[in-house]
Image (tube, rainbow, N blue to C red; front, top):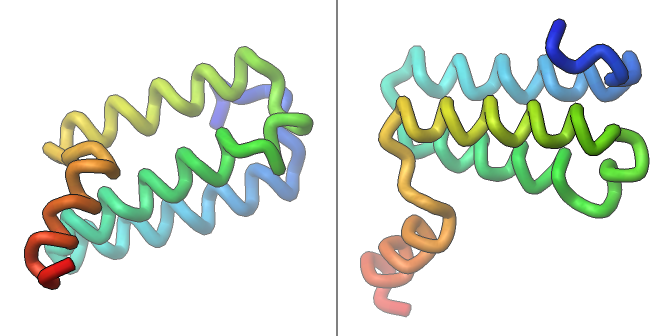
Length: 91
């Protein structure tokens, strides 16, 4: 959070809630759920709704941190997760 000095308080609170949720998933051993939550977080803060609030620098910092975390957890890309889910559900 210190690397995101321009983050407004409501954004900081939302980000912390989502990161807490990721942490709880990891504590339960639910890595795939944590990966999905990180991907959703990336889309949430990188999406058009919030980019008007985040500076380009903060958005780049946040994106890099989320991608690094996904990589360290061994998360596949969201498109790969989507296609594997489709294969297991018969879609």
